Amino acid sequence: MKKFIENIKNIWKVEELRNRIGLALGLILIYRVGSFIVLPGVDQKALAVAGSADGDAGLVGLLDLFAGGAFSQASIMALGIMPYISASIIMQLLGMAVPVVQKMQKEGESGRRKINGYTRFLTIAICAFQAPSYLQMYVISRGGAVDPSIMWWVTSIALLIAGTMFAMWLGERITDKGIGNGISLLITVGILARFPGSLLSEFTQRMEGSGSIFMFIVEMLVFFAIIMVTVLIVQGVRRVPINYAKKVVGAGGQGMEQSSRSYIPLKVNASGVMPIIFAQAIMTVPAMLGQDSFLGALADFKSFWYNFVFALMIIIFTYFYTAITINPKQIADDLKRNGGFVPGVKPGSETADFLDNILSRITFPGSLMLAAIAVIPAFAMLFGVGDGFAMFMGGTSMLIMVGVVLDTLQQIETYLLNRHYDGLMEGGSIRGRRGEKPVGNVI
Image 1 (cartoon, rainbow, N blue to C red):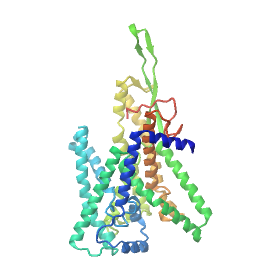
Image 2 (cartoon, rainbow, N blue to C red):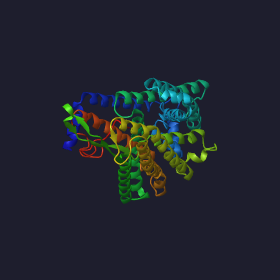
Image 3 (tube, rainbow, N blue to C red):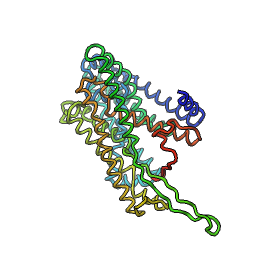
Image 4 (tube, helix red, strand yellow):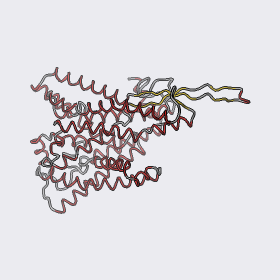
């Protein structure tokens, strides 16, 4: 506890870090307040009664989890940040197939601004498609609309689009001016907002006869074990040793500088939480299309086909995002230019092939483990765990929470270490082993 208090004091001493954390918390608070602002002309009590009768199970409950309750409350933030994520997925896919987008990706900062502009327009288009579906299938079908006139439709659609765009703006400001990845933090906060209620509901359910306190303790032990495994997967690193050639220094070449050793940290899960977020964003489409469509079988997140497709998409997106994030050829070129080499491997193309082979070998088991954790909630429900708490026993919720929390802690750790303070995790996996020097600028 003493060490923890000392770390908090160190964070407070760094003015830039203190301001960034304060700004991030303030913007997150604004987002949470917006989640409780109900659309005009909506009877929230009628929605609550209908939700209690239906149980808000299935994919609808999962959507509500990511929106922090805004989905079930018919809030102006009901669509959440998922339309923006879907637009980002589409733009990244276009970057692999469309020459114009590829050219923009190579234009540096100006190209990035153009892509961000197109992503925003695409987000509006996706919201314009999802908003009427949400109003019809969730609000009107449950008797939540007091007077569904044309003006109500126009106003509600405009507010839902504005809510998503405002959430996107908040996320970008957190990323630029705050701490951590803003979009991921907004999703994480929405998930964490439902955790206390789900935990209390599970405890009450076990104490009222559908189980026992012993079963609740077992569930908590399994819950913490899954957290530990998830942390290991997110933090797992394959260190590729790097040597740098000796350099002759001094007048007349009298001195000799010793060669230095370092390593390239290739993460088992180099793509972070993005494959899960991407896959989940796409899996929300069946719920928006309705149960009667040909994709209706994928609207039940407890079904075999939902979990099979979901796991398959996570594996595919893990490879896809790793491929666009890490470029072995560029790493090999940077090493060769700086006089570095992998012991036993020739610089240049052979080093690139060597790194690519390592990435392929570690990404495959990493993607399988991510997919396995993602489908745990469905199995937890088969063993009698309540729907609400089962979503936290693994799945997207667990992976996003662990990944985002660790990423945010790493950024805070960097600020502290750069200003010669002890890190948050003394000797832990976030800080890394002392005496080893990672090559941070090659990835």
